[in-house]
Image 1 (cartoon, rainbow, N blue to C red):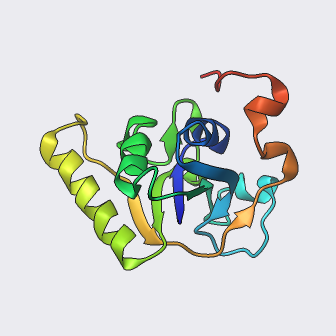
Image 2: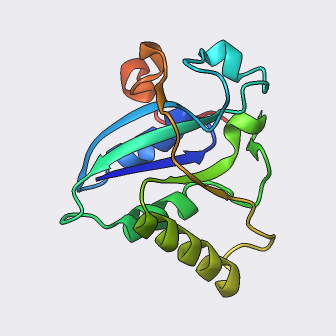
Length: 155
């Protein structure tokens, strides 16, 4: 199974998800924009419409989509429009890109539950959209923290 999330800088998002039991693999890239095969530099202009995302392949017998959504909600601020920490721009938006009708239903229910529970003090601005073409980011972005001996983003 596959899940795709945007939750700010994709380096940190990938690091969170890749450590979960049941996650088979992760890769970072771009989704939700208008330009085919965008580069990081193009995405950073805020003109392509892409979000920085992590694509997760997971074993649903070991971890559920609901569990992945819970990690998603807890790993970033879904009330901040086009911003996570000091990172600003539409590529840092909070987004769930669903791959099938069941994921769509589950994502909407999860978002509504978080809103009703009052988990966040402000309204949730997370976009929920059908997954479009995934464009793998440049190789130096893949497993960035691991390759560079960094533990987390410095915000």
